[in-house]
Structure formats: structure tokens, C-alpha cells
Length: 141
Image (cartoon, rainbow, N blue to C red; front, side, top):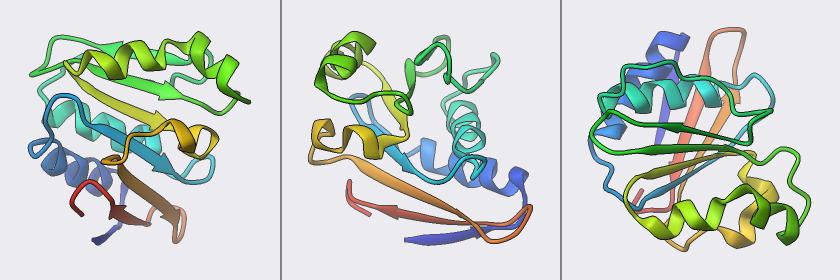
């Protein structure tokens, strides 16, 4: 499935619609360059799941947990993860094994072998300064 978003607002709106189809325990794995819109998309997912707090990139924290919506959202940044030992220290497996929320993974290519078989992959490509090509695959797409 492909979608062209012509602005950050359209990216968030698309993610908001997708969020309504998500169920607890699902994993979303992003692929995309720096500044492609992964955190913007996550903001839309959070809105769609009725989380009203601040959404930010977990670059330095590794994981941000968003509570208060329909279900928890576990937002990971795996940019600096270089192997299984690093991955274990993030708590990734603890969160995904809970099955009580949605796990969102930026820089998922760094942990590809640790992603579940039913992962939803979202590739975001820059077309120009504001437009993005969003491709969904896996997880029934």
C-alpha cells in the first residue's frame, strides 16, 4: 500500500487513520532517512490512539512511553543499537512481550532479525521538502 503525503499534516492524518486499525501487541518498524518523517508519523499514530501528551524523538532516551490513550505506545529509536547486547539493554523485548500496547521502532533496520514475523513495515521516502511517499508492507498490508 502506498500513500503520498504532501505535508507533515497529511502524514499525521494518514497515521491517525492507520492507528484506528491497530491492536495491542502490534509492532511498527520504520525505514527512512534522517528527517524523513518517522517521528511525525508517530505523532499521528498517538493522536489516533487518543494520546494527548507530547510526542518526541527518543534519540537520546532510546525509548519514550506514551500512556493515557487507548493503549500504551512504546516508541524506540534503534539508531545507536549495534547488536543483541545493545538491544537487550533497551528493554525492547520486555515491552514487546507485554503485548499490551503498540511498539513503534525507528531505525528498525538495525534490529531487523529481532522483529516479529507480523511486523508492519512503514517506509518513508522524501519526495521534496514537504512531500513523502509512505509505503506499508507486512502485517496484512
